[in-house]
Image 1 (cartoon, helix red, strand yellow):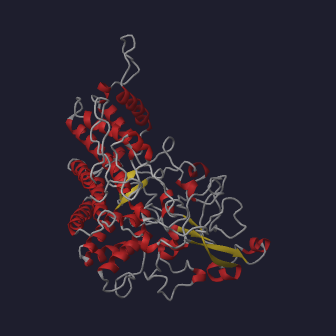
Image 2 (cartoon, rainbow, N blue to C red):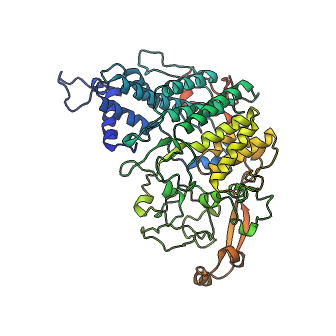
Length: 567
């Protein structure tokens, strides 16, 4: 469903009329208004209301979370241990109230029962998504399941985390029982049974992970395994799978890998991923936002699947050669071919290269020596760059597979986990090798298998905002990042600029790169080392909410905290 702009406009009127009500002015009807009665008695209006809910609540493009990990620069307060009780404010109760209004009223009108049921099911998934977003940050939060009015007790308390998870799962189960596996035509992109099933599997994976389950409760892992195995198998039966072309999966809309998506359409509904990710000039003067670290660059294996630390084919001076094909499809580096339009929208000549060396990028140079190229559409001109309509894929089938693999490994099903890793690497273009293991180690222990899965997630989902959440739910910050600094590559030109400009199009850069450039490793975290504190696994409820509601408890680990997020 590329968002229907007419419906969005209508739904803005509806949201106001349903949430506020219509004024009684001189006892005359406002003939230009859409009443609450109209909304729940007309399928078009009700769908428009749901469209507005989708626009307000579906996950969207977000480059900021990459910096809260080792895959990109930045992160600041989270990475350096400088959070306060006001830092993390995810409190979307206004949006949840609007969802609850539909859930409470859609079945009261004269819309046909099938439409009522499907509208309600999609809203249930939106509510589950919103509550999950809070729970994974704070632990238990107030679970408000009906639209409150002023006659109710508004001083709600935090619900136990376990009860929050139960209610989220209940919403997803109820939705999955009635939604179709696929929507077609102009409805393509609406919330499906596949999205509900896959999101449930993700929620249970989190619930079993060390963030929520530091004692390693096996029952939770077994429950997560069952849900994730079901999601993987049922989605495959119903037409989902790995899209053959990793690089193009963002540009072939609604391909078979897309499970849970927010669709965009210009004019009226677009985003700035392309302009915020590209180099300054091809981005039409927009500042670039997030950049790969050297740590991420070195995480990509070689084309034979082996780590760079173990492969005789790895050349640190020409680190881009013989790599996992996902490397060149995800990361742009000094001297790489990256065909992009310039600021006027004119297409550059064939085999235009990116240069990131010191002194070349006059404006907004990359702070890491690299750019993300994933999901940057090379066909965009100047207009589209700043008004991108590339869909955001929150859950793709590759994640369904790797979620399942992790649960399989945790429950001792190492063969099932290995099979998933091999399929992911085969799609990536990694060579099978004589052992048909795609570079994976033979006879991996359970711990080694889990580590391999987490590395595969880091590479497969680079720039997709998954790494930060994986580090949190697996409680990996202390072991993998704390006390360390992220790094960049600083490129220095060894010849005069005028000479370089004369020869840059004649040089074989794969062969003679080191003749013209010296690459130096430098620290990104100049002032502080990474210090993700233990209490950050469950953030503080901002004081502004505690001050408005004296019955809310603060999270344990924070000042005056009494609420246990592990219960």
